[in-house]
Image (cartoon, rainbow, N blue to C red; front, side, top):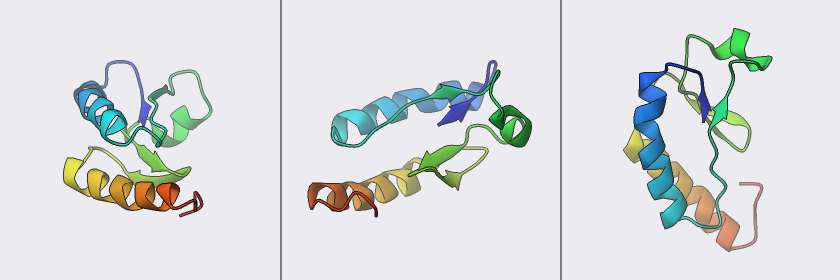
Length: 85
């Protein structure tokens, strides 16, 4: 998830991401502060931005149900040995 300093929605999303990490231990989850990165200009008004496999999944908010469904789908593919899904 792309985040920035002072992003309340980002801060509120972190506990959910931690839950997802526990539920899907083979999946990779991280929060990236973009304050000093090139992505800041592109995403500064759209955080939190959730990326799945480096592709934008959502902007502005984290829809927990949709994200969990997407992670579950990707996770099943990881377990089956296809990490490209």
